[in-house]
Length: 210
Ligand code: FE
Image (tube, rainbow, N blue to C red; front, side, top):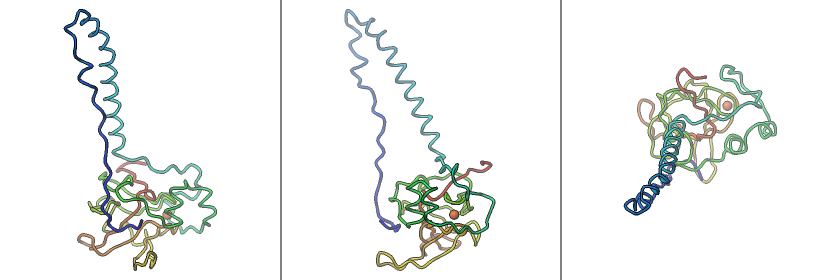
């Protein structure tokens, strides 16, 4: 799939509520005994509900890619990198490598940042280069995280892309040359540009975060 604007939607399933019958039949000879047997079940349900809520809170800021075995990753060094694909293949998770080095595209509406609204900075998940500020991110219906400008002019590079029978402009990381996505001319003011990016090659760091 290419990063245009296909209309695909994820269906999020709500947690299943316990059956009402679990709380009936108290007016029986053994009603009170049954009531007491249900108390632990009710406590368990409350505990599970709380745990689920905590999980949803944590998901509000998606976890970035881990970089423990990536010696090239730096959020301060802007010197261009010249690293072979074989070396990146050895270092990067397969899912990141396939997008970053083979220009694959993640499915629309599936990435961790397409509808994320946190305040902070987006870095290259391959090398740590600062790419975008959250204040340049806008709500696009395309299903991929979209920005109207890069953080610095040198944050990204551009390359003509004629794959899949289309004439597009590919966006590469300005430091490591990894594929990030494409840029289109249907973005909002002030630039009119839409940087259509793949979430998996981005790392979000919130304001004041490390
Ligand atoms: Fe990079």
